[in-house]
Image 1 (cartoon, helix red, strand yellow):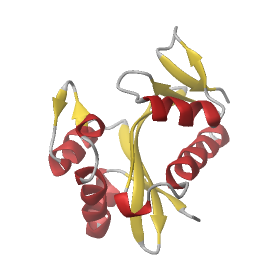
Image 2 (cartoon, rainbow, N blue to C red; image 1 turned 90 degrees about the vertical axis):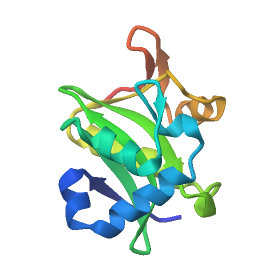
Image 3 (spheres, rainbow, N blue to C red; image 1 turned 45 degrees about the horizontal axis):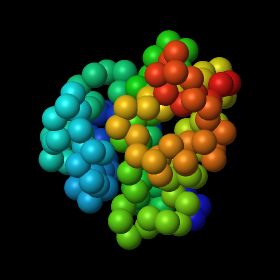
Length: 149
């Protein structure tokens, strides 16, 4: 499924209210693990607000037909992006949206000379299989799966 990468930070969501609505739909359909921050399961709107309270956080989102259909929370650090909470709308799952989104994020990071890390806390077996298939390797010293630039 062809998707476009969108950077949905607090400013973008303030300007694009439809994107906020789409993110809320994405995460309201997610299993609780994908809406857990600091050990607490949050409802979708509160999860989004809390995640964006840190200025280094933003959502990388997959745009298709003017709607966000998948997202992953990105924490921008000095030399890497950390990706957490990947989720795709239920109606578009199993169509490659998550894989495509992760690949687009990795490409954008590489263009900026950054590595990408998917911390291994709270990763399901399916998530681990996905990141391995996308070329990430486990780096226990960094606490997750890493895709070097």
